Length: 625
Image 1 (cartoon, rainbow, N blue to C red):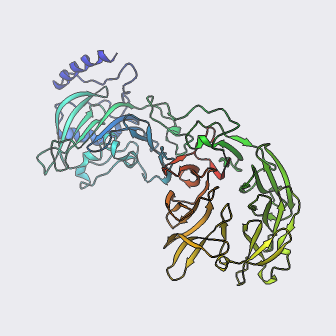
Image 2 (image 1 turned 135 degrees about the vertical axis):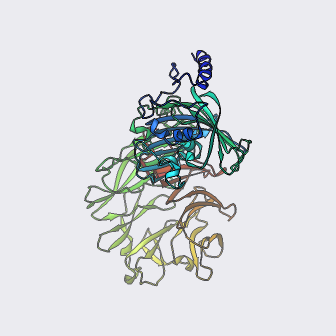
Image 3 (image 1 turned 90 degrees about the horizontal axis):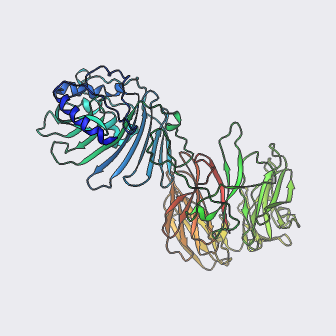
């Protein structure tokens, strides 16, 4: 069909240059544009080689009046840069726009969506996003800027120009560039994007050579091709944007412009089809070579969010396999309030979890999860709130703190089988003036306790859980803050603050206090979340400043410090069982996301799964074998 169009267009060009024929073309195979036949300018003669500079300028200024919606697909070529493809959907009355960008021969890499109130910027490759209020302001429809002579040469851009970016804003809204002082000169006519276009060159009043050349849709004034020369005028093309398709006044649904993204989008050959990248969900697997990722997910149901605990095979999180729909793991009690982390045993395929029995949070329970059998067992129940538990090195004991809501607190331990529940803080070896006490960390099968009383200046205590006896902690340097024991018990990691240098230091020390090493020092911010890899060969931590949360990993011997992840909000992480990856949880403009970071390449990958939209929240993720 297209072969028959071109002879007719050539004839049309000849007749139009003579001023004897006015033409508005559409491509009958539906791959061309839709004419703006009912636009405000439909009765006016299209541009031609006889059009004067003032006529061309006025047509460009009034171009937004000639259409309500537009779809444009274009390729951008700039010197020294890879060729790019850009697609844009614009709805003027709704003050909405959607722009996809990426490699010319590849998939979309970025998305910008504006719905009149909010603007989403999404990196499709990494999943990083931001959400900001849209600053387009109030816009009259249709947009009609004043001619330059009436507003002292003050350029009045279209409110949606900023949403389109530098690639397409001039083509779709030439009304702004037409307000500059200079002369338009017709130099030819061609067919561009299956529409008749007048080729014009614009020369600034102070220059001798043109600054740009544009192929102008003779009916709408939209640019269908745009070549930019040197700003001072010239003939060398610095950049060129060529439209391959343009459609006017299509009925775009509001979903095109929603800043809430449920799956990663991609370029589309159909302007009315919202293209979304997807893979065929894999079948659930009972085993996975990299283990399992467990996490809570929460949707946006109102007034109560629906929360679930789910698991995914870890291979799909790192991109080694397609992800199945997450398997929902049944919980022992309904999820009715704030979530609590599920804490995994260091030695067994078991996890401990505390949660209230009712929404009033009057009765709390401690449960044990058997991952192989997918069953739960209640270990303890109390009429007070319970903090998340911690495991002893052997995985035999669980410790937790219970609070009565009136300032009172006690630390308990219980065996993994539910026997030997003990209130450790009842020990006579703990000074009464230090109460209440909090558990600091495990040292083997002994528990370190520290006073929560800010007026207390005494030592921390090491308590033997088997008989409840306590003694002052042997390493004085560790009485000022919590520490984390390595899996083999050979090192204790902690954060120290030097008064003289004002530095935050991540340090390790042997349990006897004889060998101490400084791993990293920072002159600002705070260091948190010290975490050992399962094999004890690496230590990870988060350095938090006013602007970023940076996740670092360093070898046990203090070598190979590297920044594994950076976030503008809080970041939390866990190591994979083999220590080759990090699973990072962070929040951005669209929700709480998970990223899998390859510690060899430091590449991060957004974890996506069928049935979990991007704006849902992932929380308290863990990675187990």
